[in-house]
Figure 1 (cartoon, rainbow, N blue to C red):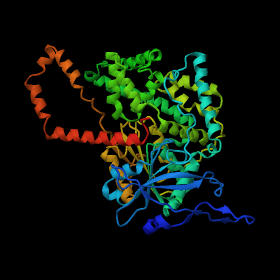
Figure 2 (cartoon, helix red, strand yellow):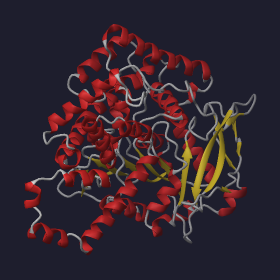
Figure 3 (cartoon, one colour):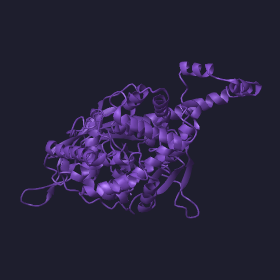
Figure 4 (cartoon, rainbow, N blue to C red):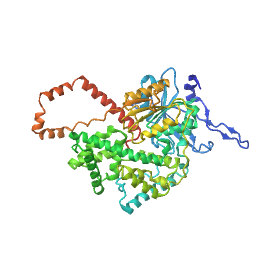
Length: 568
């Protein structure tokens, strides 16, 4: 083991130090010779929210097996440590694949307890192909422009149109980025992480990864177990399903989560007036979807765009109130404007989304083999759709370019590991994007890891999002390296209660006035002494404190899930 002194990053090393990348062979000798890695030149790039933020770039080999060949550039950010003793770099990744991580450094440093954050250089980065890293992929700009064909195929012609669209995307990627695509994959990105470590002058790294970032972390740990100091993995990809099977598991899980949302809307019928029966509310949603086939809301929200709009609600229930309001306005008032606004906020793709999707497909299609026979996709998608119709076909088309990808797939590494220090695994039981089985599977594969479960939680990305119990486990781990341990042989080492579901947003003043005007005898009868007393009792310090706490949780959750890319 390396001592803590070996973890320290000297300020001079960040400015003037020189380290080496993977060696190249000396001509005629076969012996490797070091290739110098330029030092990181950090420059201030602070924002109003994160005034201490710094930025740098790092050149890395496009092909790690040819380190003397072409270089590409990674974009990095940093919040430097302020404590006298540093625990080294904490690399943070938001997932994807295709997610930009430069914004994560400031958020994580600001969200951890100050005494913990002060001990780390928190490092964000755009992985190869992403965002400000160069070259950035953009295979087919405008691929998600509305209105797309209905995601659920309507006969052979509808399916053929969608297949041709997926083929066009894959062909555009192959034509535009032919030299880069063979090197956009998880293993190459993990090897980039080790060059970031070297450029930082660190003997080992600390790592916090969300979603796909958990798989990236697990692959890095498999390649470089001796370089891992601490590793926290939040909302875990199932390594056994990379990637076709994992997407099928998502289809079932997102349908279940959509039903949870429908039940929440039914529970708050007084706000949304869509009925008190969850099944009836869900039926109304599918009727809305059908109507949008012939008359897209605002001229741009058809069935596929509707699914794109509501899918973020499967990642984070903090979006439910606004989604429910748009749903209600369309059904009850025939007003498509809120639905269009919701699409523009939650579902509409921009240039960043085009880049993210290009990297997503490049990584997933290269990482592992997908069925090349479209008949397999058709059979599986119809079978799953019969039980889980919410997003099965939408997800199939999202991944369909992998059936026609122009680069041959790799074999995923076995990420089983018995050489690591304790790894902290954090997982919600009802997560749709990375179902609970994935967290349990990776926990079993990483010997000595600790599993912390958010019982009943349905959000994806659960630390630094307002759950104090989960955050306490993460903070203790980063501060001291300690993890909880179960008693009695349980696989779950600690359990945290889920955050409560959100409350409906207050009605606009005009709508509230209309409700009061239309109120009858029953409402008047309910406005007696008991109700007035209850209102007074609820308006004290306790109510205000609860309101502030809920607002804090909402701000944290919305900020984190924006960074994780759950709003496209």
